Every structure is written in structure tokens, then in C-alpha cells.
Amino acid sequence: MKFDDLKKLHQKKYRESFGFFLLEGEHLVMELQKAALNNSLLKSCELYVTHERNPWNSSFATHVINSRHMMQITETRNPQGIVALVPMLPPTAPKPGERAICLHEIQDPGNLGTVLRTLAWFGNFRCLLTPNSVDPHNSKAIRASMGAIFHVPIETEVPLESLRERFTRIAWLHTTGQSLQCENFKNFNCYLFGNEARGVPSDKLNKLCAVPFTIPGTESVESLNLASAVNMCAYEIARMT
Image (cartoon, rainbow, N blue to C red; front, side, top):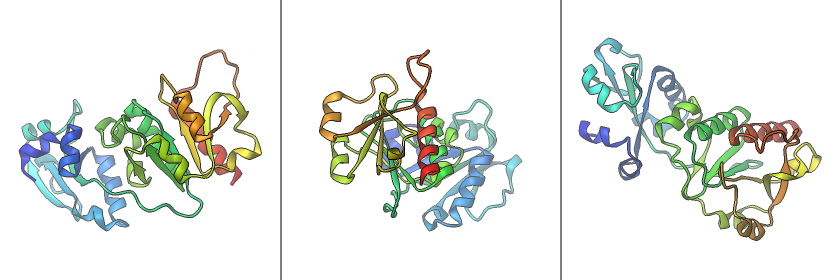
């Protein structure tokens, strides 16, 4: 890929057009290298490093660039001198017993990255993103995921109405409903979370026949942070199964 094209990858439309995204920083590159050991599609990654970082111990094709060029392809204020060009991977096929976490029009890349990190920790989850959700290949989402983006199958542009065709039982997290600590909470194969500010439209929920659940609390604040809610739910699902 031409260097000028690398700079374009900060924009979603070019990531989708080229089929690649950028990943920066020592920790994330090391996580990428670990993931590539078990995923042949990642072996085509390329590294861009500054002279100070060269040589970098990796099987990836490596390009040495100067600090000025490094600044042009990074988004952090103090780049670590190492960036990877990574192909966008198709989601793997669902596995037996796998649960889906569906995020409806989530907007905060930090929330998404934290959710992916949680799902990778507990395992056997996939993440579904409805249209108008934040791009999982956004640099902030990738940094927040701490490499979990390589360990959780992610589907984007999933129509909300399609869930009913794919899943027999759908749970919906809300401020009302049964407690997620009840035994029944584990018996769903899709768990739906709404937009940080607007939730999920009631007319669409009715068509999905989604069962509401809630996280008991003091109600001294209006709601929980989305990523925190997913964390608690994933823990309860893993604990009960």
C-alpha cells in the first residue's frame, strides 16, 4: 500500500474501501503478533517502525520510516514509533453454545473497546453492531480493546429486526425487568443493549419479543455506563453456565 493511502486509513470510508486498518503502539502490536500465530489471515500484516525501533522482532514485513512520516500515520500525541497495517477480518462462524451481545447504535469507541475486552476475557461471545454504531476499527476503540479485537468475532451493520430470525430467545437490558441474577438469565442466546442515550426504540423491541432484565441498584443515578452493564451481564452468564 502507498504511504499516502496509509494516511487515509484514519477515515472509516477508506478503511472499508481498502479493507485495512492501522494499529499503533508496542502493546497492541505484540498482541497482534500473538494473534497471528493462530490466524493465517493476519500473517500478511505489515509494520512501520522508526529508526529507533528498528530492528523489531517480527515475522511481518517491516518498513523503516522517519519520525515525521510516523507522525503522519498515527493519531496519538506521543507515538511509540511502531504502527501495523492490518487486514479487516471477516467474523468467524458461530460456535455451539456461543452467546451474542448486540449493541444498538453504540456511539462511544471507548465503551465498545471495553466491551470487546470483557467478551474476550470470558470467551464464547460474539459482538453484533447495528447500523449507525461506532466503527470497531476506530483507533480509540482499538486502543480501549487492548487487543481483544483479535479474539472476539465482530459483525457490523446487523439490522435490529434480523435478530428475531437468528436467535430463539433475546434478552434486553433495561432499568426494569427481572434481576439478571435470576436463574433464567442464562437461558438466552442474544443479549441486547441500547444506545447510551436513547436505548432501543419500543416499537422494535415489541417485534423482537425481547425479555427485559435489569441490574438491581439503589437507583440514586439514572443508569449505568453501557460497558459496565455488559461487564456485569457477561460475568453472570459465565458464572451460571
